[in-house]
Image (cartoon, rainbow, N blue to C red; front, top):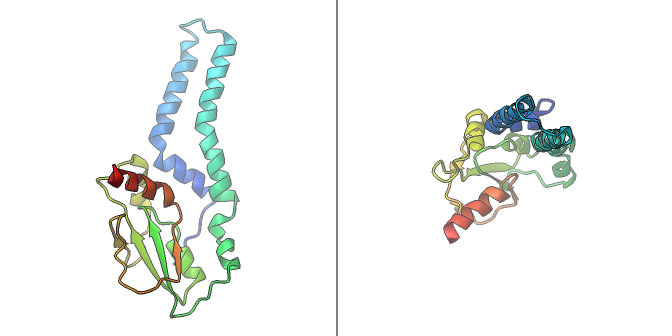
Length: 180
């Protein structure tokens, strides 16, 4: 099963998973604009504050559109160009932190190889509303194994390729909790 991404899927994910930030931001922005009728703000200060709020609300969406929607990352052309050998004896790992958009794509590019997916999401540690929402809509790859981020339960001798897309910050934050 290959996942077909919709146009602006990255932007829609940001809006959906982080909607609480956008709702609160738009309410505060409306209150600031409405305060103009109560408080005699200088027009230049009001516009500076409005522009700052709009920048804060829109810039993550622009960056998301560039990175997730226009860069071609999810086409996985970069993986196809690597000419990774795809045979039945190859073993690949895909590690995620609760939101997996890549396993089915990797499987479609390397269909002969074995793909094992590990998920180190921990509901007690990863309490951000965005990841909780993302997990509700995420497809779970068959035989995905959960693990603790300080120990991967891999029993084999070798791994040919390890994919860790969108994992770095979650892993680093989890390791900081263990080391403190």
